[in-house]
Length: 224
Image (cartoon, rainbow, N blue to C red; front, side, top):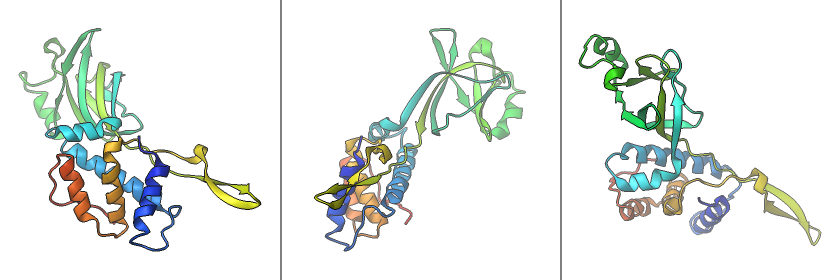
């Protein structure tokens, strides 16, 4: 976990050398949260081919077991769901099987092909994404194990004021503060991403962080 107060203090310390008048209390958490989303999306895009991405995403990976489909085969996505990593069919207590993804345009076609259609006697369960959630075939109530990437929790920092020697002093209010869920191995990368979004010239630092993490990325895209 990354302490949001330490993160903003470090950000303020670095940006004071490059940009006068930086106020950590004005909109900076919005930039931090946007960078969180961008980093999560990028790491998910290379998740299957890069072990470092797996390690970095670990704080956002959730396993739910059991999770069930309803009588029409619909699995309602968890509230914080972002991307599916795995969906496994649970048959009984100790038996578990992989499922197979199919596109929505393939559902009717595959249902007519005996060798490919869903068949519980062969432990063949299919799924597709719909507007309501995830629909499985056979379309019935079944039990699953789901692994997914959740949305990073929004970071926030709140303040309160107290009197010190008859002078008002701003202090962090823990009740209104939310830390970053990422591990410390993402601290510098997120820091430079936020600075880049602030318009500061740190692109070389970002690329260096990716290189140190063993992730090759020739162009880092942030939305300013």
